[in-house]
Length: 619
Image (cartoon, rainbow, N blue to C red):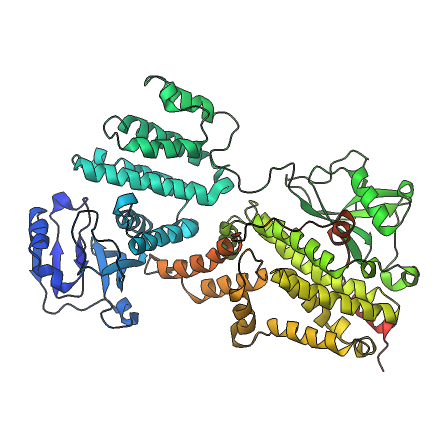
């Protein structure tokens, strides 16, 4: 094993120590330090002068004066590539008590094998009193990058086994100083706590994670007698496992048994971040005509009779004359009984819900043939625009706040696409599309010119209010709905919109300007304080651009620079979900909430254009 430091020197470890710790040569001037030479000599290292050594080709991209890439080889193969970066230190001492006035350099991972990246992460991690402000922040950033993206290059099972290996290293190496062994064990426990805190219910169904937690806990119980300092870490680990009793309540012979009894209960080892299943909500589509549907935001426990009542009230039809039908894509229809459940998490054949008359015909004919549209009341005109914006924002916030950062990783890399790991993200994207289609549908279903003008003014104000409430997801959706060809071509309607509303709309349109990589949007969003809701399609576009523009593996090594860029982008979710103001969300009235929870949407582009040309025929 050798370190290629680009400093004209190589050193190698004797075979007996090749499975031991890694020694880092940080800079050329460190070779002259007596303690460094003494330490390497004590460990049995041999220094070899290499007059013709040059850096590997991959270091050619390193920019800036003093940029050095260090390559670790095993059996002639690269296993870890690090790059030296400057780091302003604020801590007066390192973990070993050595002053740092000349050690203002540290190494970040460029690429490596999964296990070597994890090994470097643990060696770079600082705990408690050993953690300087800047040093600790950088190490925690590396830890966060790894935990956010490890599923790209290794399975959860592999990570569990690797962590157990690092925790129990002394069993393999035979000897190790007690202080170093304790410090390494605490680092592993710290990583596990961070991992569980970050992933929460993403790990709740992983059986090997449950087994890993039990095994690790048993090891900690055994080690706490040899290392009493682990008691503090043990208590934190107990909180993680949500134990009902402390270990002190049991004798040493019953501790492991008690743990297994309690973990066998149907309790999650990690705290759920989202709402309980009985209080969360889902989006349900019910078709009321061949080319339109109602989007109903409701709870998963809803039964057919309750949903039918909502549809009847929204469409102003007698409930007793209606039935709900589940229609498969091969045309088969099944009439739902009043107490049949609407929502199911189990995989089933795709089908759509249809609200029908009892003779199994749709409530409405195709909207281009519907004679009822002229008499259709425009209820939105009677609702305050700020209240509508509040309801939209509250709806979006519940969906956005339930999104895990890992959902963006799953969505981008398309890993386990059918496992339900991206449900919240997909719901928010669906909601964004539906708000855009709702804006178009409301305007194109309005046959009165005067009311259409009022609707345009209404939506412009709602978009502005959503922006003021830091909800750019709905604000963008409304603006894009007004900018679609079927709506923007209504010249007679737009001509009657007052100038101040046109000016406001033009200002809002600037946010959607894609020039200079959406600079206007990014500048405006950066100035907003959290909590705030970004325009999710653009955030996903940024992550996809990083993913497709950079290889995930380079020379069979994980390209960790790419994963750092992705993790850095994904962390925007965490920043946006932070409530720095401490204010409670604004409350909306039931009537207003119903107006934005039950949206009548036309999902047929041809129908939209036919309605548009019926309102204002082409000259």
